[in-house]
Length: 94
Image 1 (cartoon, helix red, strand yellow):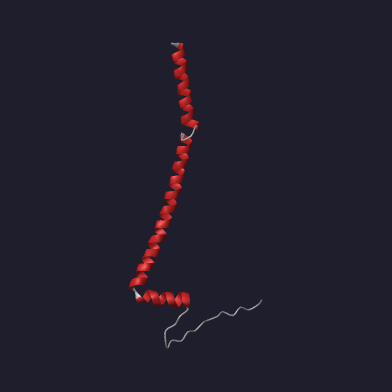
Image 2: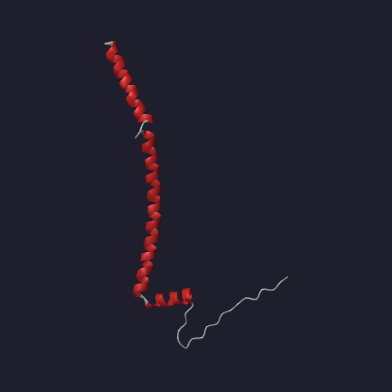
């Protein structure tokens, strides 16, 4: 009976070791949970950015004003028979 008890206690300690410190242990599980949380946060940020880009794409596809505004602001284009004035601030040396 003692031998059986010792074997069962030894088996319990071996299983406890695997649970707390072995491969696929509780520490590994917690680390994976943290990794999942970080990835979900990153995915949420990317989803928000994708929504903004999709809204911008839809705006460019449907509205001529948006295309014109982007051409003026980013490319510096002007319409035909339009005059463009650039105001440059003069910097004085003190």
